[in-house]
Image (cartoon, rainbow, N blue to C red; front, side, top):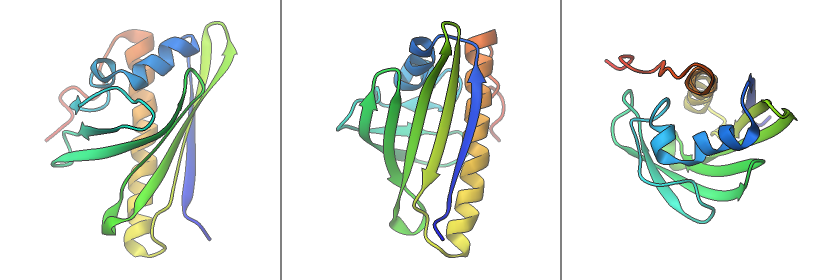
Length: 145
């Protein structure tokens, strides 16, 4: 059985604004990553840096459909790649549902541990995105050791 998960959260902002907050590095680093080397553009590889995890992490951007979908792969424990899919659904003019799924871990104890860690990380990202867009606050500020 494949290890995969999906998280979702409604953001009370128009889909274009939500999508842009994920794609644009300056916005993304305002609530989620310490640094993003560039925008998420199909066919590129960008680096994300997190306060909690040392080093830069390659994000291999496979697909970007404006205001609808972002698909990327990135390295997991043991050298394999996991696939992340972000879907942006317009609920109405002022509300967007964001769904994030990730799959592709190895089917062993380390793969399961990594998957459980990432499911929490993606839910945290969505909560931080919501706080950033709806209230202008960075929930991650001061959160790193």
